Image 1 (cartoon, rainbow, N blue to C red):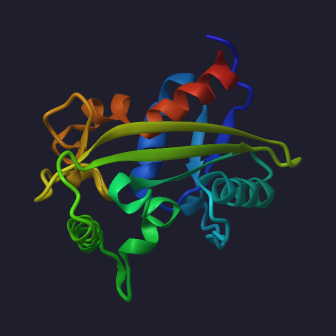
Image 2 (cartoon, rainbow, N blue to C red):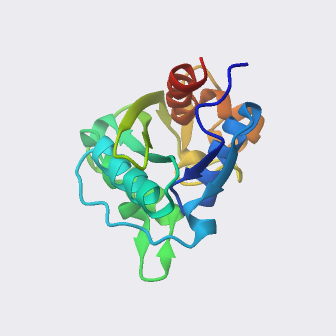
Length: 202
């Protein structure tokens, strides 16, 4: 395996689910991984209206704060019947006064789809944009998608976010019903990560 282009990498996230998935994907490459949350970094305001824009904000903030390369993830679910919403605002749909409530967010998405009168299948896709930023200001963008359909009621206790209501194409179970080992290869994040690996470790 080629020598990694860096020995230590900051994962620019405070989301434990994302941190776990990305750390597992990086495990074979001999890179020491630490998260922005573990370092106590602040969370920068995500002021862009695209996945790539917000991914760049997070990655460059972490790279500048630590002096290390940083990998960020901006991702969300895009529902065809809602013209791609919630999309880049996926996490916002889960916000409450007491933190994020994804059970509420899933119900909100389903109810809005029902209001549109969308028939089956209720198609959707998870989208992921990874940004690798270096302290000097250079960055690279990698994108991936996982196509599938929405189901109701949600099924499964695994995963995070909208996983229990998303059934990836070609599968009879939701991401929430899969083990991490079953889910990881099918995700939008894994597909973006394949491009990251090809660029950095290929």
